[in-house]
Structures are given as structure tokens and as C-alpha cells.
Length: 224
Length: 224
DNA sequence: CAACTGACTTGAACATGTTCAAATAATACG
DNA sequence: CGTATTATTTGAACATGTTCAAGTCAGTTG
Image 1 (cartoon, each protein chain N blue to C red):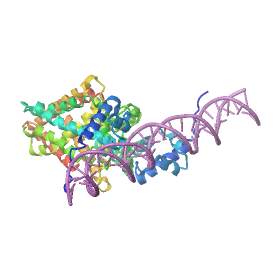
Image 2 (cartoon, each protein chain N blue to C red):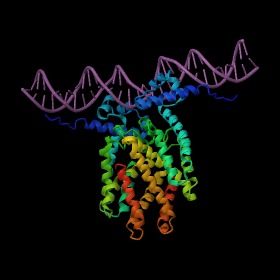
Image 3 (cartoon, protein in one colour):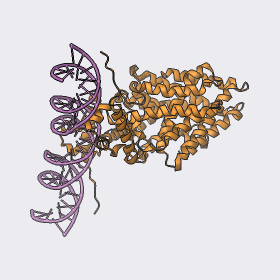
Image 4 (cartoon, helix red, strand yellow):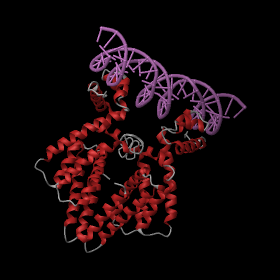
């Protein structure tokens, strides 16, 4: 009665995925053809398409893994760290660490950014779940800290967006070890946390508070 | 002796471009094939490729036109407007006005965002000129106003980036007439100009000034 | 004007992502 | 165990972006 999707070909799927990632790393996303991937995995072309609807979907599956690993690693590295700045630093830097060898094909994730209808669009409906998972980590990051309710609701999504920008910057960053990206992350986080603290300073709060309110209003108005 | 690229086939090129745009509008970027475009323009497939190296290059050429028209229209609408807020409003809203019927294929501009090497990447080397032209308009926009030297150097590029984000948002905006995008633009511009004014207020300048300095430093560090 | 040159045009051929009907293997069921 | 059903696998066929060798045509040259 029930379709009982048994973990039968699960091995095959994993094999195709790992083979593909290997090839992508070696020769980039474009150069590695689906036929290359299939034959490298000792599998027929059609098999690859049985498990992955499109070539980009392979990268998407890879990125799912990345997110799982990232959540793990982040929680591990968080141990003993309770400050907002520290915790955010962990989230961002550990992500870069995980992605460090994969800049050559990471760009495939952005291929459908401009196509709202596409199932793999970063901002589209089809990736809602992946997105929610990614946002969740940022929620965790700020959960314990002294941030207003209001901010707690909107900041995680904003941080996710910033993090997406970081990945893009990372892809373009040709400095050794992508140190420029790492430095930028630190600078931005310093600025951000200082700005948040500023909001709590009684002296100038009256001046800055309206801005914060306005900014939150904008995010809401943007349909966050 | 001289190659004298006579305006011989210029007509053909324009015909192909306009036919393509027409088809893109009618059925979207994906659906309109190069063969469709060629035959609609009463031209062989190869002719299309004689004038445009790739399908996306057609959209790129279209966007060149858009930028020219945008510069014109903006300068026209600027007449009699000298305030920063007003002038920026013109730049952003007139762009949306020009693009209003082309949301369906505008996404093609973003296709290579994740590929630094690709000649059509929005952030890549191959589009440097187009980018410079676009940035120039923002420079013009703030030129007359009371903005620090330092800002004059960096703000235009930052505004260009914001404007790119606006286009993306615009593509995703399903509200009638994309009013949400228009509203968002106004809100963001209000916030921005108020923030800039804040910097000039003697009372709180000491508090906010360091932030501005830091922000500019970040942009510079990012290799702007 | 005849030959030449280079811009322009052509359409067949190619590469590669994707689809699909058919074959095979695995599993469930009686 | 034998059959039915479902999962998996296959590779040929297809669609479409792109390349390219060959042709055409207009203008230039001698």
C-alpha cells in the first residue's frame, strides 16, 4: 500500500553526488558534463537524472550537506562563547571554512537568482526550506543575547542575506586563502554589533532609535 | 587600409535585437529560442550569432540601450531638482519606469552573477564599462549636493549596488505595478538621506562619525 | 570591367543538458 | 515459490545553444 521508499539506491545517489562534486572541484561546474559524471560514477546517464532532476540540483544537494555540516560545526565551535559578536563570528567564518575548496562551482547556486519561478532560485519558493534552515542558525546565534523581540524576528533573515553576500564576495575573492573575505566579515560584524550596542546607550538612543524602527519597518514592508 | 566598419549590417543587428526583445517580452527568455528569434527576424540562425556571441549577450545589448535611455530620462527629470533626496528618487524610479514591461527576461542579466570569469557576470571584468557608466549617473546625482569628498568617492558605487538589489527585488515583486518596489525605494532613500543629514548634525556627530568612517573603511577594504 | 577583399549570411554539424520508453532488478504479496 | 508491483537502470532520442566551413554580395582596386 505505502510506497515504502526503501534506502535501496541511496548508495547510488551518494556515489553520483560525491563523484560529481569531485569532478566539479577538479574542473569546475561547466566543464564537467553530466556524461562525465555518470561515467565516472560507473552509471548510465539516465541514472544521474533519476536521482537529480538537473545538473544544478546536484550542487543544491551538495549545499544541503554543507548546511548540515555547518550547523554541526557551528554548534561545536559555539561552546563556551556567549557574546553576540563571538557567536556571529563563528557562524560566518565556519561557513567559509567549509566552502573553502569549492569556490569554483559554488557559483552554480546563484544561476537562477534572477528567475523567481525556478525551483532552484536562491530567493524562490522552491528553496524555502533550505533557506529556513539557514536562517535558523542565525536565530540560534542571537537567541541568548540581549536583543529586542522585534530584532529577534527580523535580524536572522537579514543576517542570512548578508551571509549570502559574503559567499558571493568569497567566490570573487582572489586573495590568498580569501583573507579579504575573512577580514571583511570581521569588520562588518564589528560595525554591526557596535551599532546594536549604540541602540542601547541611553544618551543617544533617542537619536538612533527612530532609525532602527524605520529600518525594521522597511524590512517588514519588503515582505520579509 | 582601414577596416571601416561601415554601418552595413547595423540594420540587421538592430532588427535581431528588437525582434529578440519582442519575443522575450512575449514568451520569456527561456521559451524564445535562438531559432525563433532568427526566423522571426527573417535571418539565418548563424546571422544572430554573427552579431551576438551568446543569447544572454542580446539581453546585455538591450540593457545597454536601457542605460542610455535611463541617463537621458534621468537628466531630463532632474531639471529644477537639486535636493539629494529628490535627485536620487529620480534615478531609481525612472529606471523602474523604463524596465516595467521587461521583468520577465531581466533575470538573464543575473545568470552569471556567480561566475567571476564569465564575460557577462554583473560583477566581472567583462562588464566593467557598463558598470562604470551606471555608476556615473549616481555620481552625477550627488555631485552638486553637500556630501564629503570621501563619500563622493564611494557612495556612487554603493548606490549602484543598492540599485542592482532594487532590480532584483523588482523582478520578484508581484504587487500591482510593482508598487512595493517603488515604496521600498522611497523608504530606503528617506532613511539614507536622513542618515547622511544626521552625520552633519553637530550634536550627535561625535557618536555617528566613527561609524561613517568605519563604513567607508570597510568599503575600501572590500576593494571598491 | 575583372579580380579582389572583406563584410555579411547561410545552414549543417556539434556538444551537452534533458526526456522517455523500455529493460532489468528488487521487493511485496498470496 | 510464482506473480505483481515498484524501484532502478539503461541508452537512444530530443531540444537548443553554439561553432564553423563555405557561400554570397558590395564595394575597391588596378
